[in-house]
Length: 151
Image (cartoon, rainbow, N blue to C red; front, side, top):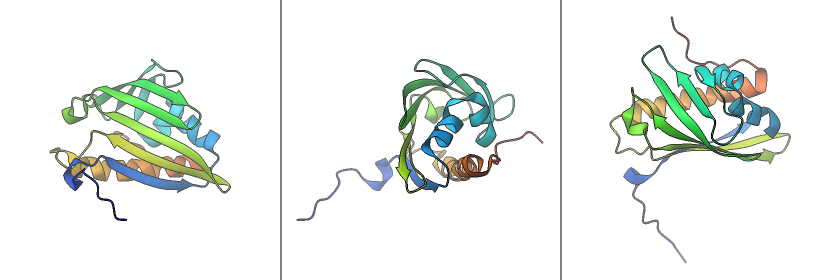
């Protein structure tokens, strides 16, 4: 029996799967502490350690993304984007990280819920997420990522 999806390619959220040579606890820490997020993504303020916390990630002074921690469980972290002035298409989207043990490491399933190819920013955001997810892997594995840095 063959099944087909009712979701067109243009309606699909940006997703990525990474295998990380670090424990789920190490990856979880990289996603739930300001120091961890700053180590792989960008200048970070606020907190990401409890549901309801507000996390801000900056890319220069005029590009700050404000997110609420919507869900926080050992294998699942979800951030709700309240405001992203540089990429307003992100407003109201969710960023989801699902973690599962994989051998001696972790499988990360990433999904930016609502970020679809229909958005004007999609190509730029696809390239950005590809870079920053690789940075997350490097940070979790070696303690050094490639976050945004002001020149």
